[in-house]
Length: 219
Image 1: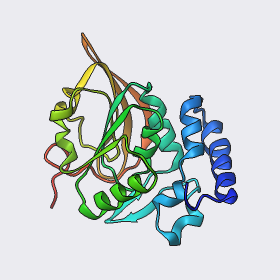
Image 2: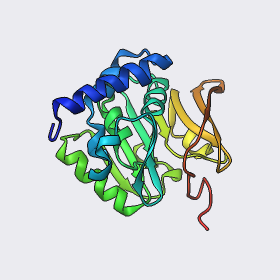
Image 3: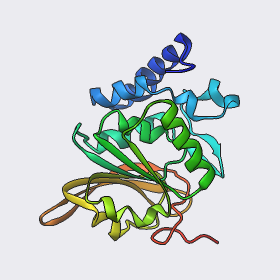
Image 4: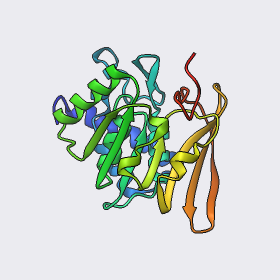
């Protein structure tokens, strides 16, 4: 991959070992994806040297690229297989979608902010992630035409879990979503089965607001 020097590879290895494995992420496929995807290319050139730090970074449009550990934890929680079709709500920088693309058959990702949508799509093409399908739209509505999905990941904090997204999961499908107020959320994993929804809390987190028809309303 372009601009992927030995230094960045070393920083990725340290990121995985010190920030991710040490906090309990054990899925070998997730760890391999985190070692492979060049996170520094998903931030501005001015921030490349900070790309592998243990913190989120700004990406413009008042949005962020999530802390590496959070990306790994949410990805592991999806329990992905190579045949899975995944929906991501909130493309952002595109980094989370690239991680998913290493693990799943196809990734459908929706972004409501046009500059981020364009930047991410261009980067996916440059890095040859041809199994990522992008859409410029309100992600809280999901992607009905391509549903149902094996897994859904929401990368912004919602006031509640959108029922319409649950309905776009297959039976046996998994969703990971931050739910709470605009300052702090609980990271929720849910599984849809024949009897309904099973929810599990993965702990506290902080994301930007999920804005849209089925999220926070734009002021």
